[in-house]
View (cartoon, rainbow, N blue to C red):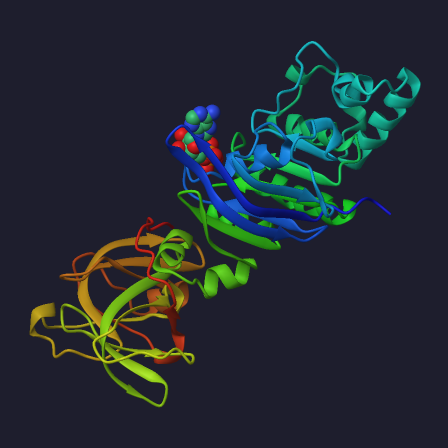
Length: 377
Ligand code: ATP
């Protein structure tokens, strides 16, 4: 059986002078899982990867692989391999020699390393390109050579730093499927760094959302997307509208919140104890919002509960749904993703006054109040 590729980061910290790149992180990545480290530029993802690989030394804390500390071990003794975004293939070596390179460094004889490199290339369906030079391959093919080269040493952990960012959209989708397939086939641990939300949730068993050197939330893709813990995660993942209000009353485990602009929202409390006047954040999925055109201008409407009133700011056709962005006076823009058949049955236009409604069952209470983050998607 392959050595365990379970990774434990214990209170892991990295400081560069005054910059705290990674701030006392605790994380356990199970053996054989596909983990994505996700976050905006500068949040510390690459530094974590480099500390696992042994290219960077922690300022504090521990990195354990298969239950043993690897801090202080050189990269080649960690059982890890790394794949970079620019592939870093040697231009003067054939595809076969590129793939065999790490075995050569380990003193494996020519016949054996070529044989193993051919097997590896067959696994990514590139055996017919063994004698080509890297410049004679497409971007996607070079990517697969880089993957084979990283995997040839039978690592227990593969570390991938933005592996798909140099590819065009079509190839990116194809390669991410390929990475996922390879990971399942090999059964080793993959840790993949990306700043692309959809990439992370498409491939990962475990998504780790980071902000400024800290972990905001770690969980399955579905948990992160549908049950974000904070406004930061909800906004960063997209797909949600964040609502904020003060508790006006609580009945049967459901709080009624009143926003600064007087809108009233219901939010299930899921057992959380709150007091009147507490400020709570909750979110409602964009695809659970119904839109209706209204005749009167927004200011003239009575205030409904679980609804916001505004004017259509933008309409973007997305194939299966239409993304409608609404300007709501006094709050951040609200977004409704309307199924395309529903939208075209009763279309709205830019500038139309609309009401966006939802039901309380689709509201999710955010348990921490992280406010940073960007709206995506
Ligand atoms: P990106 O997606 O842009 O690669 P990242 O999330 O991978 O970003 P890191 O590269 O880990 O972020 O950087 C985290 C922080 O540490 C940043 O503020 C960065 O400027 C800083 N940093 C990283 N490496 C060094 C270094 N060698 N010297 C000084 N500061 C560094």
